[in-house]
Amino acid sequence: MSLIARYEEMPFWNLIGLKVDSIEEKQARIKLKVTNDLLNGNNILHGGVVTSLLDAVMGINLKLLIGEASYATVSLTSQFIKAVRADETIYATAEMVQNGRSVACMEARLFNESGEMISIGLGSFKVSRARS
Image 1 (cartoon, rainbow, N blue to C red):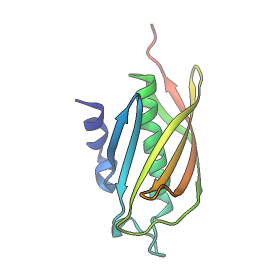
Image 2: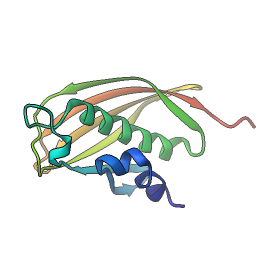
Image 3: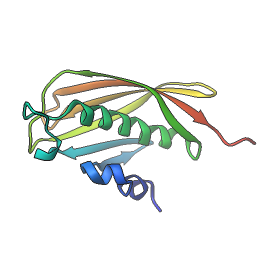
């Protein structure tokens, strides 16, 4: 099964509608079409969905960079910059900040179709590499 299929078939990705937009040179970009089901009481995208998208893009990019090792999020911060409304499509990218022996640090950015920043996130991941 391809990496794209593995991620897009995950139950959570399916639930909220996450899709892989592109994968180039070990760099994935994901996207989300914002639906009414993802809005909070103020009719803007729920912050938990924003944070989940940041975590998801860091995860798929970490997998591209570390290969078959397993990982788990141990810390995640998010900064909310701009509100998102229903029917917008938003995109997320991530890059490695540091790759240590057992902990990796990633930074993610979420933006809209116009390229405006929506959110920034920083995550730390416990990495369990196969022993050789």
